[in-house]
Amino acid sequence: MTGTLLLIDDDESLLTVTSHNLSTGGFAVIEARSGEEGLSLFEKEQPDMVVTDVKLSGMSGLAVLASIKEKNPDIPVIVITAHGSIELAVEAMKQGAFTFITKPFSRDALRLSCRKALEMGALQRKNRQLTDEIETMRGKGTPLVASPVMEQLVSTARRVARSEAPVLITGESGTGKEVMARLIHRESSRAGGPLITVNCAAIPENLVESELFGHVKGAFTGAVSDQPGKFRAAEGGTLFLDEIGDLPLGVQAKLLRAIQEKEVEPVGSQKVIPCDIRLLSATHRDLAEAISEGAFREDLFYRIGVVPLHIPALRDRPDEILPLANHFLETFALRDGRTLAFSKGAARGLAAHSWPGNIRELRNVVERCAILAVDEVIDAPDLALAGPPSEPSAGAFRLPDEGLSLPDLEQDLIRQALVRSGGNRSQASRLLGVPRHVLIYRLEKYGMTGQDA
Image 1: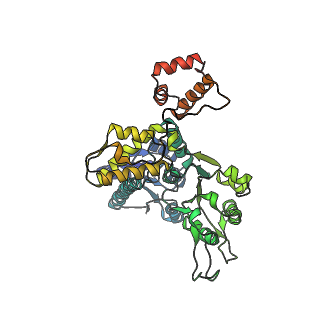
Image 2 (image 1 turned 90 degrees about the horizontal axis):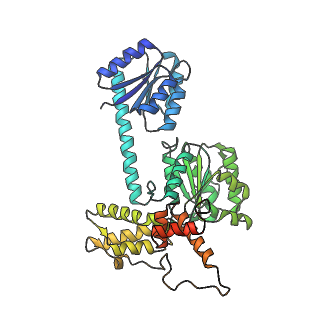
Image 3 (image 1 turned 180 degrees about the horizontal axis):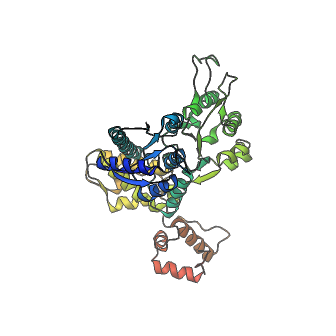
């Protein structure tokens, strides 16, 4: 296997010889004479792998390694070291280097290491791709977006992923909070480490502390051996606490300490153990209300929510209903070796439903249709949707006894439509059921062409 290789070395003669040996071995070599130049070329050329000397003038090889792994954890990096700097090579391995080669090295040994590194990189990328496909089948893959508000949210999540800041993901059940957490983990520098998910609502109250922080043998009845707990299981990776709003207050205090001190104390032990994790949390609860009721600690709220991400309900992003439904249908049809499609009536039924179960409900409905479908076309009756549609039927609105201002109501509806459509007037007009020119006329009539719109 050959590919594009970035070679970084400040020794001009060694750089020339090594570059020639790799080029004649079938590699396309990009040369850099410093760590700074190497990172610049890495951004510009996007090579398949990197070979760098561990000792460079200016920016060190270890700093180059750390920066590359932060930008793209899947890129294999080989470090070259002299006999006297084996300690540095070992440190490089700890930071994610594929391997190290000691000087002097043979041409064949270098080529073989590079080929193995490229194979590993290709396998990692393929594994990530297959994992995404499987997770998407399970409703846990990379978020599918078809609305401005979700595009912005996913973009923000990707930027946040590059930091170590704790993230609090909020939204109704079924909106895709775990999918967002997985995205943040995959886009982070910790992607090579584990992602440990804990459903705080599913753990019995008397076992939560042990589940999170671990316990020692004999700490309580049934503790027949030491258990490390989820914090330690997530070492070097990400810990995702789903439904954190359901944690008992006593455990919240210990969780706060674990986050602040970056260490845990297993149940029944007097020994504290350092933990290197990145924390993500999620809840469908209103934590501000829980704080006012004394059910959630305010200091913990600020600690876990350095970066808040709120996922809107599916009914508030109607532009995504049909794209998501079609994606799920295509996925399930492919799984079953079939060709399936929604009729226009079914599409209208999907768009009109209120989706109280959000994306989880949508996915389940589509999967049921795919399993039970007799023909290739799924029609409205096949959906078997329960509950009221998202838009009220004719005559459903009830005029308040005190009356209302029709212009005020109209302006409010226009504002809501513009918010849901991300300011897209064509989409807003479709939501309101009027031609685009009628919406524009109303905007001008009410002077809503500026920030009020």
